[in-house]
Length: 135
Image (cartoon, rainbow, N blue to C red; front, side):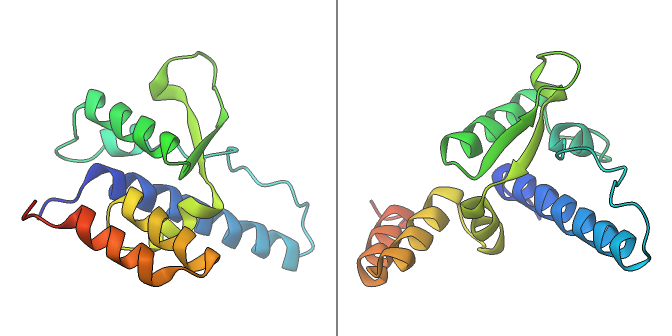
């Protein structure tokens, strides 16, 4: 089973956010210092490069750029260098909703914004026409 890289990167960032929140809640409830050892963002390129059959770095960078264009991700830290594989990313509020929907990030953003603006019917028609294979 192959998963689109955009969706995979969103899932990696979502898992990072959930794990960070769990650790911070545990530290807060135990009365410990609220300073966690988590970095300010996730590095999906580094994480996915450690998989048994990693995607090409060029493809990962391209997917991250696409998600930045859609405003699903934001760069929070440039790391030690300005090499793209060292960038740390966080989900934006739209990115959070996109990560929960099993579709392309552009379509998920269209539906999310359509729902917020109260024009979900029109947004559904647009998303359906964009995702149609019989163009």
